[in-house]
Length: 156
Image (tube, rainbow, N blue to C red; front, top):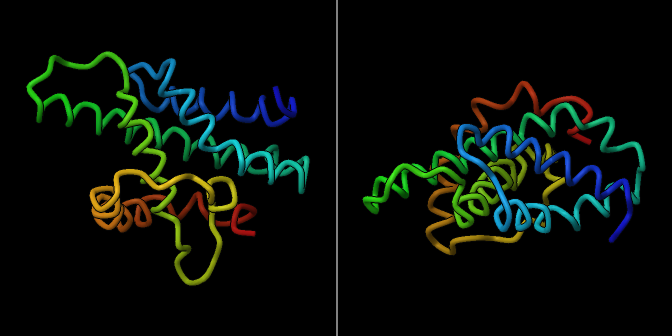
């Protein structure tokens, strides 16, 4: 296991994604995938500044809940499109895509400002052309809805 501060921060972030995903559950593989996709950035940021996560936590938790909400939305849409019963858990692919969409909504940073990107800049691309099409559709909405929480200390 790695640095205890990194592990605590990643655990909290995944818990907040799960909170945002309710009433669906985020478990097992989906939770583990998200955790590992954020790991490199959390390790880098906490190594550079051990207090960074504590300073940014409140805003990051809000965004983590947004990732959960997007994951639930995508899972439910997928179930409807494929004629599946109402899901009880966030689909693995949808969880991964939700993290990607939230990341790319703020990357590249508008106006040359780095918003929340330092905590998720290494998040791997997902979905190829489909993922990029979704990003181009979702980016304006998330940038419109989320600006109040993306200013201040996270915009370093």
